[in-house]
Amino acid sequence: MPRQKLLINGERLKMTLEQFADFGRTENNGVTRLSLSEEDRRVRGYFQSCCEELGLSVKVDDMGCMYATLEGTEDKPPILIGSHLDTVKKGGRFDGVLGVVAGLEVVRTLVENQIKPQLPITIVNFTNEEGARFEPSMMASGVLSGKFDKSVMLKKIDSEGVTFGEALTASGYEGDVENRLKEASALLELHIEQGPILEKEALSIGVVECVVGMACYEIEVTGESDHAGTTPMNMRKDALFATNNLINEIRKRLSDLDEELVFTIGRLNVYPSIHTVIPNRVVFTLEARHKDMEIVNTVKDIIQGLPNLGVNEGCEVKTTKLWDRDTVWFAPEICNLLEQSTQSLGYSNKRMVSGAGHDAQFIASYVPTAMLFVPSINGKSHCEEELTTWEDCEKGVNVLLDTVLTMLSK
Ligand SMILES: [Zn+2]
Image 1 (cartoon, helix red, strand yellow):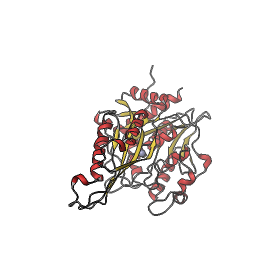
Image 2 (cartoon, rainbow, N blue to C red; image 1 turned 180 degrees about the vertical axis):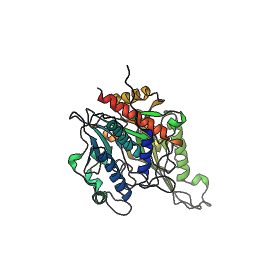
Image 3 (cartoon, rainbow, N blue to C red; image 1 turned 120 degrees about the horizontal axis):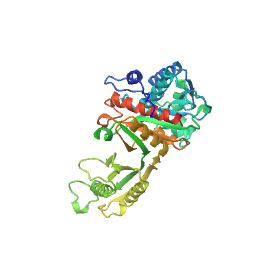
Image 4 (cartoon, helix red, strand yellow; image 1 turned 45 degrees about the horizontal axis):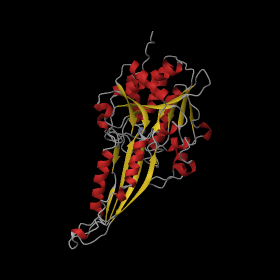
């Protein structure tokens, strides 16, 4: 017989999310809670008091990440549930905080039902996921996983010249390197989708299989500046017209590769940008993302081949790779567990990819990890309009609870 489903308290989840949003709530019902700001310091204190009230022990590592643990009956690596409590400027009430509050709600449900788990359950708050105050984003998980060098990160400065290290010390959340996340049985990160797919397809849950790989290039087109009135059209080296040709070629060639490929020319600067002068220089960026690295590599070949396409109108074209990253695949066994729990609860769902970066992608390098998405209304995030229905938040946390119970019963 299937076991009776234990469910979380949706009303309490909603209330808790609203309580957390009070730390930095904006006029338009968004949240500004930059990493290690006064708002962040206060929400951390509130999170800690919620955890201690439940009897959890709270530890902090040397990057300010918080770990609140419900002891297990066996001394084994914990199941982690978490995300981040920091936000961008004028961000929303769900990005990040949902994954942390989800952990709190799962543990609250276990404790009130007097369930003593065999494995410890740890709620995690990763420091500075957003990178909105101190670049780069996913800073702490990057250090934990060895992707970033701690000594370099400590020197990163905000717009006021304060270093990350100074802000960490001042916040009172500079803990011990000993407390860093090491071995774990699993990391489960519930997050809002930040895109329109689930809502458009009227689905409640996305089981995230990977964070897609990407490549980002800067392309510089150099021509010659001359008088806009006196230079005949056939005697020009117009960097902007050449750029226009290149962009058309990029769009055509990349569109032909795969319908799931997304690509963006997010920055384009024209020089000297004077209406009587032929542009002599254009610099633009192109970034492309896809889960299949073969396709990402084909994009790289296309970009690197741009100087030789014969559409440059006499201008010089130079391409520079700014950065790239490989697709990070999540643990298939954890994805399966999340999917089974979703289906056993009767929630509509699909498998999907994440086009955005998350702490989970770094931690996945040493902990079996997977993510769950819930719909973002109108696909919006990183803005005050960011919204996920309470019902979908509740469903997401129910899936986490069910998955944790399944892991514990094994
Ligand atoms: Zn986030």
